[in-house]
Amino acid sequence: MAEPLKNLLHPGVVTAIADALGRNADGFDRRTFVALAGDGLEALELMQRALQIRDALVETLPQSFPDAAAALAASLPRGDAPGLTGWSLLPLSQYIALRGLDHFDLSLSLLRALTPHFTAEFGIRVFIDRDQERALATIRTWTGDPDHHVRRLASEGTRPRLPWAMRLPKLIRDPQPILPILTALLDDPEDYVRRSVANSLNDIAKDHPDMVAAFVAEHIGGASAERRQLLRHASRTLLKQGHPAALSNFGFVAPAGIAAKFFLDRSEIVLGESLNLRLAVSHDAKTSQKVMIDYAVHHRKANGTTSPKVFKWTSATLAPGASIEIEKRHAIRPITTRRYYPGAHRIVILVNGQEAAEAAFDLALE
Image (cartoon, rainbow, N blue to C red; front, side):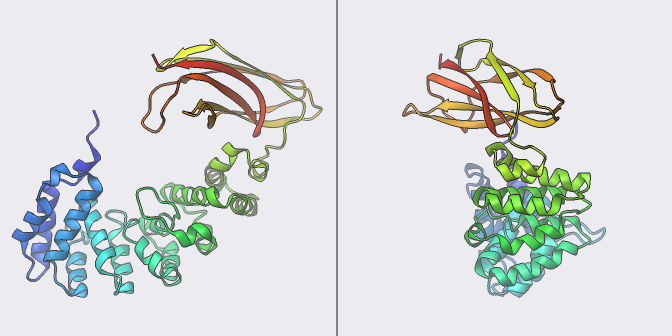
């Protein structure tokens, strides 16, 4: 069984923070910090632990934020000298977010120094929310930073809907201000950074699908394989939704001359079992056609209606008169993000976003 995430912040981390700050912060009350940070720690979840440690820092670091910031900076690794790294820096970035808002430039500089040792994407967001124009002016300069962790912070920290973090309502409403940051990083040499750019664009697509489709269209011409992969990953939500312009960006046009025959190996299934999906697709048009084949499982809801979940299957180029036959196993098993209800379900085949065939099955819970 995997170790719970909350255990990444454990009493040993508290001791490591106490030791580092004890060396670098004048007047730091190590004993009080350890007592406050460790009080009932093991009963708390991950982010609760981070906030408790942060609050202990508030009580024990110097009240002058510049003095506290100097102690935090001195506690980071420098050259061959060891320092705090990893999850021990999560509560430190949250401390900066809480206490550093009145010291804007100093705080951003400190978060930039922290991020090579543990991402500062959670700490930076309050500064964007407080003064978006000022924060983004600084963050844009990071796109040319020699450290790829800092470049990634420029894209990841500005994601409108970053998981586990506060949302950025202004950028959800209007993401145009971060598009220059993402554009500057499209051809970053590090895949780590490019994946972040793709995820940010995918976030934006959930609220502004046409904007992202247009962005991809603008930047896909003559793209390298790496940029093309980034743009495809950025379009994943739109492609699943069958967004016409997004599909067109990758050569998937409305299907013509396509016929599909779809079969399930059974019409009844018990939760925990799998279905075998069999699909035959033929093409009788006069020119070759590029097809993207997905399928949507329409899960039954409590009120008897259904809600689709799209799954990727395959892509192919069909010559005139060509056909393909493919199979796939699909498990219907319990997961934490979905509640199943018994009764009629259906699976719909999507070819270039268009419904092409379907089959139904009944689900029993036991």
